[in-house]
Length: 315
Image (tube, rainbow, N blue to C red; front, side):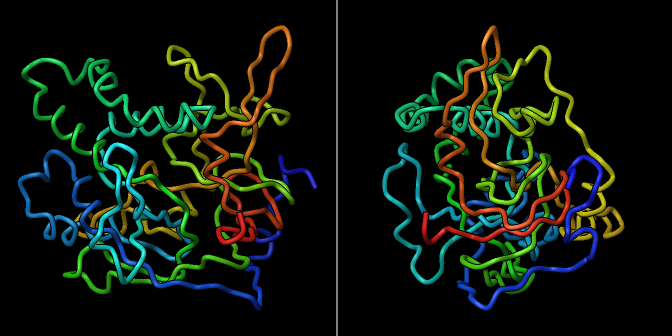
């Protein structure tokens, strides 16, 4: 099968994979963390009201990739002792500020385990290097970015959502079932996927960190050039599937909120880091390898429906 012009099995037939063995957990939306990712304009609104008024922006939708937020990063040490009954999860970063997203990107760029662990402690150096956070006029923005970075969890993949949960109890149930083991059909990310590939998660805004220039190096992590960024493609297939699966369509109306595709979690095949020059050099990349959570059973083109087997219990 050529993944350049033929749809995946799931996209062609409109069918979904099923397996007898399923491991399911009830997980709770991390309202406390999501409230810290409100936009600057919404800071004057009470947190619960903000998450309720724009409920479709913050909620968990069926078939979304779910991230566990219980484990705190090395900056803050121990996890939240109040988390007991359910694993705390998120499926979107909402209105997280761009500088915080850039810090997350820098963390997952780290090719070694030691670099990954040490990068969390470079918050001050990162903030001082951001031009948009300097000066008295940007003091409030710098304070918010500093707060968001300081409470960032060490994201772990929990599984795939099987139902809908709301970020605010004012909207409805904040708990939903999450598939943590078994086979499931989900939407592929921006790169082709093949049967047998290890599957990792990534944030949508990281798309430019991976190569899409040709089929041979498709999906490999590259040394991104900030002056000449890669063209990021946004095909109709992506927009259609996002609207259908994750309610990003404007038809819902602004009163209910609209989920941003850039703030969502995507999947791709795990590929090594690629350095090009006189000779190509490839090596395992810890920042990506630590995000592997599944294996591909039936692949497809970018943004196709693909079948994966979750391995969060066995990795």
